[in-house]
Length: 143
Image (cartoon, rainbow, N blue to C red; front, side):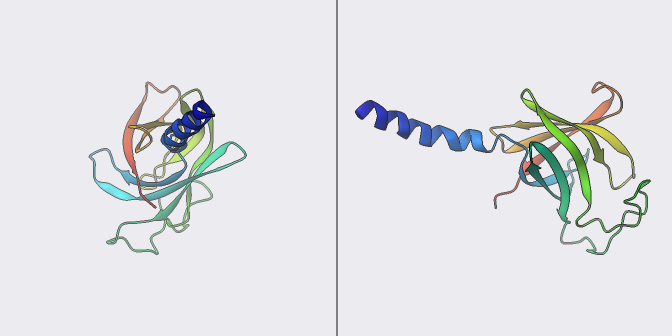
């Protein structure tokens, strides 16, 4: 009985550490120079992850639209816009078909990797293979 209680106690301490090692949650986003750009919520539905711009910075206009987008998102409000699509778990990372840069209107393949015990998210956008791309580090927001 003591062993069972000890095991359950250890599991209660360990499981919360692993619970945040997925990309789900609210993330403070940063550009390539480390400047905060807004907040994206990544959610999971049937093992597929999607990211939506939840809010901007206090200095942003809530009515800003993506005038540079080249697809169906052209002219849409940035707040509420889906910017990460079709991401699925692949080993220790998550890979998907698309991430949108709403400042340029360009889309890229995407790779997400939780780091620092899930407190940060390594976000890599690339064309073709991962070698040809750029990486940003986003920070998890406490909710």
